[in-house]
Image (tube, rainbow, N blue to C red; front, side, top):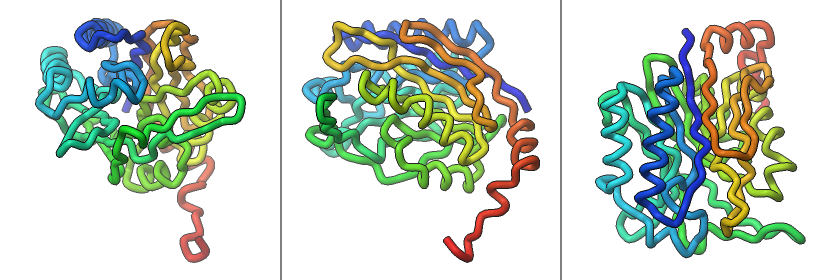
Length: 268
C-alpha cells in the first residue's frame, strides 16, 4: 500500500496564535500537495526555551489541540501534531497529539527522553528544568500502517524504535528540533540508522532555521526508506516535504535482508 506523508517545516514566533495560524496554513498546503498524513515540528506553537514552556502550556482541551482536530476533520487526513507543551496535574510535558480523519485524538506521545545536554564549546540545554518525561511507547493505528511516534532526543535510544517495530510499526514520525551543534554531526546518521536498524520508513520533521531565535534549529526535515536512502530532504528554510510511503517496499526489504527474523532472542 502506498500513501503520501507531508512534513511541515515551519518557522515559529513568540505568538502562539500566529504559530497556530501558520501551522494550519501549512497543513492545508500539504493536503493540497496530496498528503494523507501530515506532521508538524517539535514545539511548533511555542519558542523552544524552558522559560516559555509553562507559560504556553495547555491541556488536551486547549486551543491548539482543538484547531488541529478541526483541520483533520475538515480535510479528512491524519495529523501528527508535532509537539506542544502540555500541562496535566501541574506537570508540563513535551507532547505530540495525533488525530484521525474524524478529528479524534487517537494517540498521544509524551517525550520519553528529555533533552539534557552540556556540550563543551557547544550547547547547554536542560529540558528537565521545566518538563516531565513520558513513560509510554506510542503507536498510531491507520488504515495505511501502524505509525510509531517519537520526539527528538528519543531518537538516540534505538531500543525504543525496535520495540515499535516489533509491535508492527512500518513508519516512524519524529517531530524533532536538532540544533546547530548536534544537527550537522548526527541528524542524517540518526535518521538513517533507525530506518536501517528496523527496516522501516523514518521521517523527521524539524522547525525551520531562525538565526534570531534563542534556539536555532537545524532544519533538514527528511524521509528515509527501509534501505536507508533519503527519499526527500529539505534545507534549513521554511518549506513542505511530501513523499511516498510504500508498505510493500518495507516487506520487500525485510524479505531480501532478514534482519528482524534472524534476531537471537535466546542470546540477547
